[in-house]
Amino acid sequence: MKRIVGTIILILVMTPVVHAGGLLDWLEPSSKDSKSTAPADNAKLLTLEPKESEMYPRAPISGQQLLVNVYQGKKSWVSRRSLNNGDPLNIVSEDNHALDSIRWHGEKVTFLSMRGNGLGLWEKFIDGGGLLKRLHTLNDSLTQPILLADGSLIAVRLLPARAKDKVSTGHRDDFNNWQVANYRSQIVRIEQNGSERVLNNGTNPALSPDGEWIVFSMPDGRDMNLYLMKIDGSELAQLPSARSVDVQPVWSPDGKWIVFTSNRAKADVRKPSNSNWDIWAVDREGRSLTQLTMDKARDGAPTIAADGRVYFHSDRKVSKELKKERQIKGSTGAFHIWSLPLPKLN
Image (cartoon, rainbow, N blue to C red; front, top):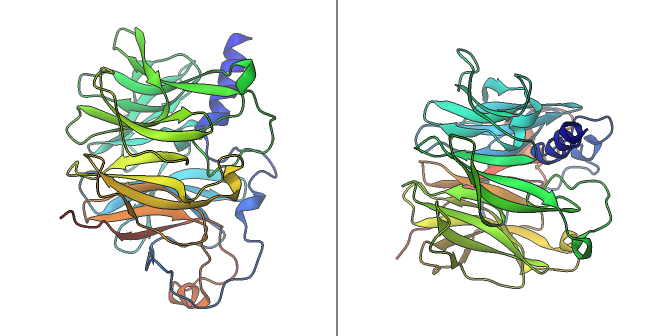
């Protein structure tokens, strides 16, 4: 029974969209395409396919490609896309657990899976073929794993929320991968021998390019702020805070910028769904705080590619001109991948 409950929890967390009838209906557009107006932030559309939503882009340190989660009807998978035009290159994984755990690992990817009689961290080639190898045998209720150079893991472990922190359950907002109703999260480090140590409370960890630091989001009442710490949990430091929810941080390839999702421009801490979600950037020293996107749509899950552009998912409307340019007829999904340049530091 314990394994069954743990598996159910994992499935709820691991997938930005759950494979269940009706839960994907919200991804289909409910209104007509907007009139032809350029985004206020001049973001450019990358991915657009018929009746398909693309979310949670992940860029490698180098190369002209991107991983995205794709949702079409009741189906979902991880796809490799070209940074030149957003075209699909291949399906990387159709594993339900890969959607919130897959990460680049050189020319391969790592992801969580329940194959092999239990939860494990697996590795495979980016083209979707070749040898599939299990790297770690793990316990349930883990998500967002990061494989370190020494073979150990940084991951997020879910724990039951304390009675005072429990909230009423409802339909999970798939834009939100930092919070699960009635659960709290901890950043943990798991050694190759299976021993586990709690580094801090928090979620959405991201590893610096030099492999020495982690930026993550930690709750503070209704707010969530970004923190830095070494991979052993030492030297904890807080980045500029606000009465806001700052989540989904990612490092630039040179380690100078941290880009993240935030509602700080128009925050409603009591009801975050009323907030306006944008992409922000701050430098490694906590300075040069910059708002990158300025659209009424929900912008989130940024990643930074080697080409110096920030890629993110957004449910901003796609104009008729853009659909015609991409030779798309009929409906498209709600979310697509957009991009804009990362500003230069002075």
